[in-house]
Image (cartoon, rainbow, N blue to C red):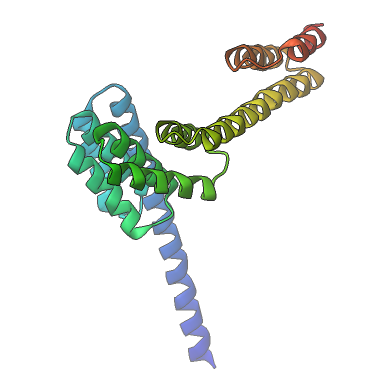
Length: 218
């Protein structure tokens, strides 16, 4: 009995150490990934790729690092290598939305072959099955339908995009009202101003948003 208790205690301690190590490794990966993104945004692609590769060395399933390397390869003109990186992710995680979407962009921007366009189309449909609110994927799919002369489906996708954009704009307006209620007037003004800009950009009816602005500005 005492031996069993000791065994359980040892297992428990080992489990705690294992969990602690995983947390630390994830923290390290997150830090390296953020540094890599900073370098990427500054167009320091060489340093960014080194940082992303270090993330992958620590955690092979940190898929976003592979996708970022794919983007670097793409912007450097290495299209085959860019595709290879997305394929590595999709081989391990067939439903990875980021890899599916980015691979579609590569295929559409670098090739006019029907086979690649069909592959991109399949990917985008899958992205939307996994996340119906993915506006960028829906817009790209609409462009494919339009190119194919499938205007009915293209219109349908554009209408869905407008619906998504209106929901986002409405959410900003509602957030503005909430900020005003709790006394955070600056954030309230920022959100309603953004809502009005989005409404103008997307040719939505802006009268209701202007009325909200009048209310929250008091």
